[in-house]
Image (cartoon, rainbow, N blue to C red; front, side, top):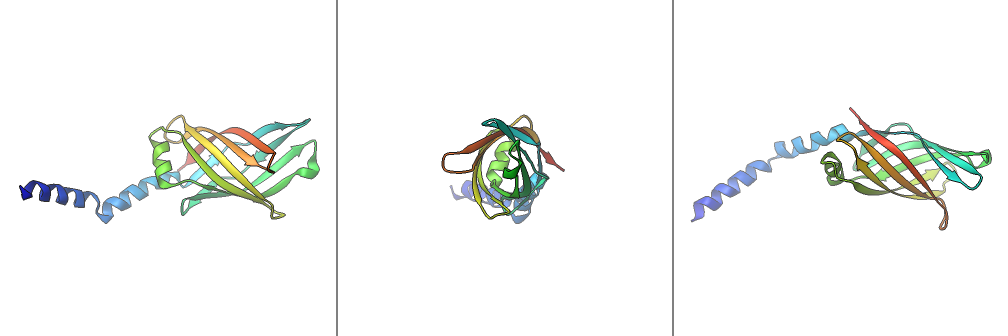
Length: 152
């Protein structure tokens, strides 16, 4: 009676060896860099275009600089940094073709914080559509719809 449980325990222990854990982690390395296409949204009598270089991931957080250009109100243009939290489990969901939600924050060069929420819907294992809400104030939010692509 004890032998089947011992066999199952040994098989389970072998599955969870450090080498297996390292393989699971290294398979996520293909998701360490992601490119977000420039995004544009409408505002009252104008538009906001947001551009970002490639996001890089470290410790479960993607970071990148950003530039927001407000047309025709150029004096509202800003630059800063973005940090988006995406767990390993969420990345595995994307790889399986499942949508995920995420949160993060931005900080412009003047030190103003922006809360960020979003949803990513994959079209395949490395590309998909992304919807991002940037909360500028308590009552103002900008909604950007664009695409993403993981880079090797």
